[in-house]
Image (cartoon, rainbow, N blue to C red):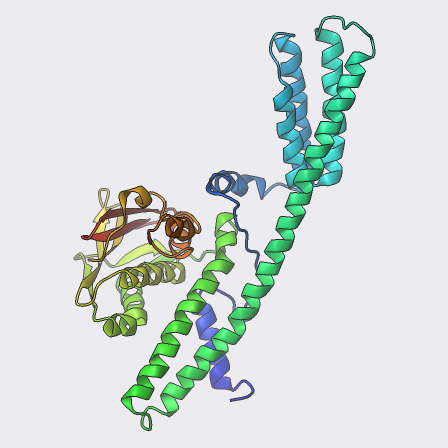
Length: 385
């Protein structure tokens, strides 16, 4: 199967479209947060900071320095504002760059010196305030160089991850396409064992492709730059498509998939492709942690005076310990859970689900009880808000 036949190209483009990516699979950034506190802070600040130009970010940093200087002057000699000079310097070094960070350090050191000379009592020697200003400037420079170096190292790591993840995606999609073609042309010549092996290969490759797509999209969702296509979409079609794509895995695991749609539930305002990926992630996660001969129920009902539609995926699996229930939507929480001897979910899938639902103006939550199962529910507006 060397070369790309028109059929393979068409199947590859359809797969890219389904995964919410352009058919040519352009590159996108991947940002890994150092810890959960940083992730929470960035998720709140980045939608605003990311829209500002470098010049505006620099201006904001210098305004911040000026405000700190004014407060330092007005507070007199009794209150210390030394630590607050560090915040705008760190902001400039991280978001704008080393050169502007150095300039901010100079401005902060001079401003601090002027306040020191104006407010503080006389020193035993006239050169002491200048020496103090030099020491402060040196400390500001250390922080600036450290943060800018850390940012540069992080960018290099992100670029390396970007290339690795992106370069994995294209050959993997070709592998899936090849297996699907083999499945079609050899359906009458393969025995059941061979068909099962091909199905397993397609299923495993699909799961790997889903993980790669999640990696590529996480950064865009975190930064508020994920292109969305919200519209009034048929709920039944999205639910049935999600169940169909994981039905082979469920059947092989002896798990029954059930859909329950409330009467008169027809459309909801959503990005159908993105919501489909969320449902596939949630159902796949439920299958992974369910016992054989159990059932998984996908339920859709109106919520909050019929202004929202609630999608839920309920399993009868092992459940999630209470101490981890509030963390399952955090990035790479599985790593931390494994260190503690627990397994609570995938490392990125649930994080992707949370970000994808929040990007559409919805909310996602979890209810779980050990040895009784888990219910994950997300809501979306029925009409545009």
